[in-house]
Image 1 (cartoon, rainbow, N blue to C red):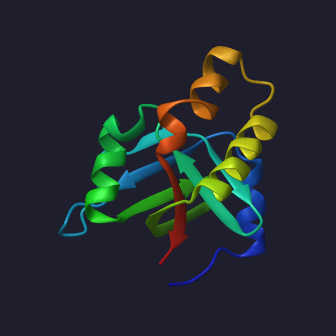
Image 2 (tube, helix red, strand yellow; image 1 turned 135 degrees about the horizontal axis):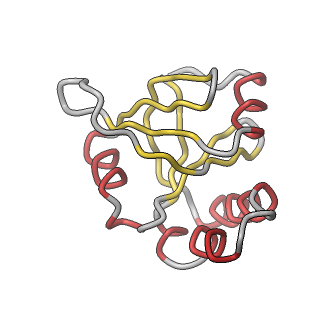
Amino acid sequence: MSEWTPEEVHAIGEIEEVTVAPLAGDGTPLQSVTMWAVTDGSDVFVRSAHGHRGRWYRRVTETGRGVFDAGDVSREVTFEPVNEIKNQAVTDAYRVKYAAQPDEFLRPMVEGESVEATLRVVPV
């Protein structure tokens, strides 16, 4: 596994939306989903707005692999669940980065089932 470069982390931290395309078992990219992403230190995180029920979430947790695109940053990645302590830092990062978003969009990303579906995005 590799790491995000500081430039990639900065770019991801600045961009409003990213896309994630789960990879099928044979490595073929499946349908991509547009979502929010946040950074904490040198790590990148995403959440499923529909929690564990989200189709993309189910697929990436089955295969563990996907393609992450954020503007000029495009990497094949793996996904790892996070612990409760890190999850709070991710929630805080969502609140800060997306503070200007309407509450109807932000609240579901910082409460309830989406918090339980937080994944660390790790470049391959």
